[in-house]
Image (cartoon, rainbow, N blue to C red; front, side):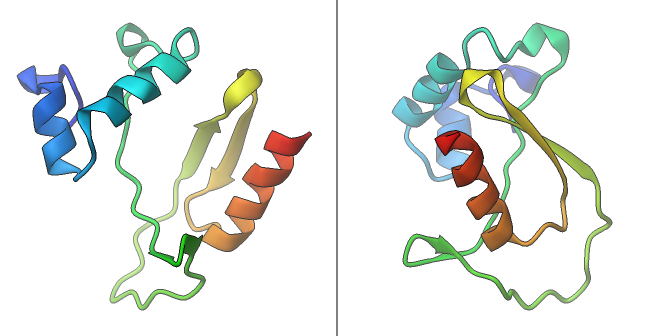
Length: 101
């Protein structure tokens, strides 16, 4: 469920994904100029298991979903393209390295 898609409100989306409305507004503000719903860009929920604020490296999975290419847009106009099966710990390290550059 994305805000504005099928009439979904910010409140409905926030409740469904257990986040605050303020978080959605903050993301919109941070992405202003980089993200355009009119260009077909959408937010998709991404569930990464965390323990103590760090992504968990091993998650038991009954059936592995098919892999797909993911584009992650970062601050400063940077973007990362990676496979959806990329290890969360490695991805977190990569994001931190790019953000620090």
